[in-house]
Each structure stands twice: as structure tokens, then as C-alpha cells.
Length: 304
Image (tube, rainbow, N blue to C red; front, side, top):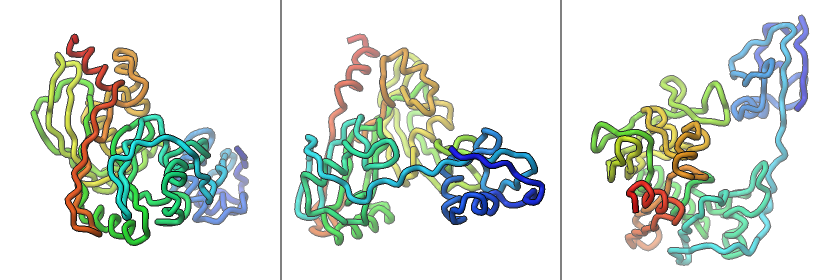
């Protein structure tokens, strides 16, 4: 990480302007670094509208760019649907969607390029065929496009809310109602740019609908969640916002349930995916069983 000390001559300058001048980076690049939490003021995450003061220490880090060419890797995948246009994968929790800082290989995209080489370049380089994603630590069904035409069609279908995505989540505490809607806008956290948060000013609308499936003595509640929108970390942020974070979530639950339940990741599984195929008109309805690690947690809670 590089650091510069603000001189008296630059006091009062906008942070993006100041950093662009001392780093040689474009202002748009600097703004992206700020948004990603890679710029610090005196050791604390910077805000985009910050005006620099004399003597402040401005630090920044430019991550290595992800590789544009994704190398095929022979990694076993569970393919639950496949035709000439689309494929649906049952993603394991441990797998990252595509290469990025810290994950140059062994991603879903690497495996897809080996299994479906025809999808190279679909949707742009770096994220072949990906029109929606699952976080690392979240398991379950994720669809990818194998052709450019199907990619564009699925992007539009997602915008029109024509793709139904249902998740199983174990949340901490006991919800007072059997069902409900969380309608709260989501944006990057102002205090930690690597996390997301409900932000009533800068957030984009996010809507999650839930119903209770099972209760566990007031300590945990099993819910089914459907999404009207698809913001980053949406389910995890929404349940944290209402005081019932997803069990085992390393970012939003502070680890208490991880220790109690023996979880090594968030209890969140994309169990159902349903849509009308935009190229064939076929109704696609797919289910994924709860993985063994999560099923074992429920067995333990039930005293099995």
C-alpha cells in the first residue's frame, strides 16, 4: 500500500482529485478504489466526498487486475440442467464464481471453460456467461449462459424479475411473524467498503420476502426467502438489518452461531430456480437438496 501526506497547498481538495494527482491514476479509477475500500485516510476507510486536510496520510492500494483469459480447469461440477443455450450448476459453498484478487484459479468459471468451451467470451471477458451469482460460502443453483443470445435474453429476464430464486436460510433468534417482506435499500457500507449495508440515502431498492419453515426454541429460525431484486449480499444484509443475521455468516453474524453450531460458512442455500426459458419457451423448474453440512446442523437442532 502506498501513502502520501497532504501538503498545505492541496488542503481542501476533493479526495479523488488529490489522489489522482499524486498517484497518476485516473479519477474514475480512484473513485473505484474508494468504493472498494482500498483508500484510507489516517488508517480509516475513506469517503468519496472527503476533502483532504494538511498532514493527513492518504494510503491506497491498486489490486492486481484479474486475468482476462480464464484458463480451463478440469474441476468436477454438478450440472442439473443443460441445453444448447443454458446450463444450471449446483455450486458447492467453497467455490468462488470467477477469478479475482486472491482467487486466480479453481473458480466456477475455470471449471465451466473446461466443460463448455463454446461459452468463451459470452457476456464479456472475465465472467463468461454469468448473469447472476452466488457468494462464496453460499451453495446451490446458479445458471449460466452458453451463447451470447441467451446471455442477453437472461439479463433482460432478470431485469423483468422473470427468474424466481428461492433460498433456505437459518437465521439467529425467533422471528415474531410467520412471513413478511424486508424492503430496504442496500449499498456499500460507509464504514467498511468490503461489506454491504442498508442505506436509506445511497442504497438501491432491495426486496426480500420470507416465510418461516421451522423454529428452534427461540434460538434459531429456518426460513425460505425469495428475492424480488438481486443486490450483493442482499439476504445476509437484510436479516442482519432486522436483528436476525444468517447463522454462521462470517461478515454479519459476529461468529456466535458458528461456534455453537459448528458452521464453517453461512447457512444459506439456493434451493430453487425457476424461469421460462427465453429461447425455447420451456418452463424450467429446478431444485437442490440441502448439502450435508447444513442438513447436519438441522439434525443436531432437532436432536436427531
